[in-house]
Image (cartoon, rainbow, N blue to C red; front, side, top):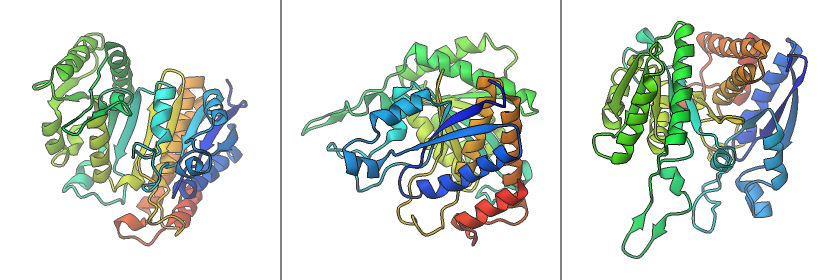
Length: 359
């Protein structure tokens, strides 16, 4: 594919503030299109809790087909607390897409942007720039919808397989290599509970065996409880981290809190063929429709999408566009932009305007 070919993007705006943060991201992508050789074709479709209320399904078959055929999937926040399946679980097409397309690598960057406050003393001086890679289809999530509940107990089963772990670790080592080539440390840390559970000892064993094939990558191993303590003391000691699904679910919110909150945290769920890009935050129905939502995480997720597309389709122009968006976000915040979740007065429209102006 060349930069002159249109990249087909499936756009699922979702529920709550999902459509509100999606709109600025699309506006920025259209600005990229107008100022580069890149071309986009956006196809919008409904997914989430509101779609479930209307149809009885979180996504239609045609939407799943669209996602399968698109070059990438851009997803807003989905789900509403009061809309649930009969088993009382929330409507989560974002999780369903992981299983449908085998999106085993959940990529959660946490980078402290200039001008954004962190609760960690010394963060501004040392900087925070790490990536948490969360396995996204196994672990405790392999039991989703399959748990057994009786009057006396409830059981869920944790599953870790060699096939998925191997792919996850290969992905993680390659990312560590790439970050080192970009001037970062390139340290890859395996986070587990191998001192207590056989499944995590198995997980770490595969990591150790994979490390032998990447002798140029510095590695470390730590238990998840010690990792949590270290993240709130010296987060700048970490670079790339890889862990199991549930641990990653929790740690990714912790790392987002280190760099200004979920409104600053982009993410991706990546498989061998497909990838979904979405903000880490939820639908925030309490502020929906008020213009308060921070679109930064959605904008940075779009930048992640461009970077992945550049590699997937060998389109260097897309990687350059991703860097342009990140630099524009950095400049906007360095110049005084302050979103509402950390005490500022800038809502959705102001943030979008500021980033567009810098772009």
